Image (tube, rainbow, N blue to C red; front, side, top):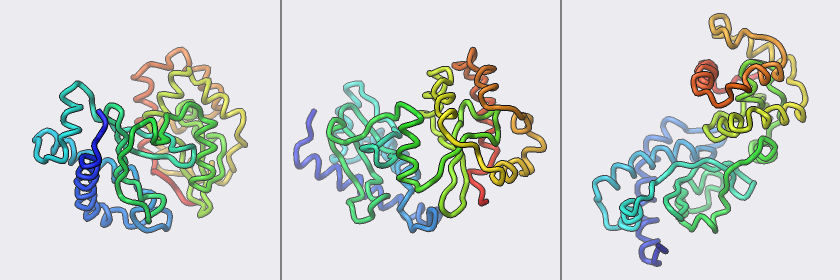
Length: 261
């Protein structure tokens, strides 16, 4: 179903209203991102907050502006949160329902853009990320980072093969999203192995700083040493094993999101 001009306007205005309500709390919690003021860089937090409220609004059928979305839901479609590439220029968090792309964080790269964009998926420029190489191409340009092998925690590297270091010396691992985990697992870690073969070794300073964290004293997976490729060989026969994934991810999320070198 194609939206009429009136439906498009009403839906965009209503979603902008939900976004403004979300902003009131989010700006308190996330005033800056890498030195940039809110909403820059906060597409995930904004999308998640609006999605949560929108789901409640759709369930209560509370406003005429939502009728096009309700019609799609009644036809059996689901409103989904998605993460991926926007024209291979940015990483983007958005929503998709049927053939409709909804971005309620459209101003998180360029604050002069409207808060909300609604367009057919086919016209959106949004697509899934299909390789770690594609991820790296976007990350280097969008985040202004230098990328390295995850030689820090080799037991985690099959799932999280990339270390990012920003211009401000912030250091973190890429990429902690369900989509990138699925990419690694569905390839039996061949995607991880390939990108590890292309990236330079991680600087010793970063390795030492991460491994000196207190959590490493008690978390066995973080204590393991060796080459990432050794753990790929060890894990690949259980690449789709969710218990193995959950164990790795549990250890990963005990680490801080980033450190400063």
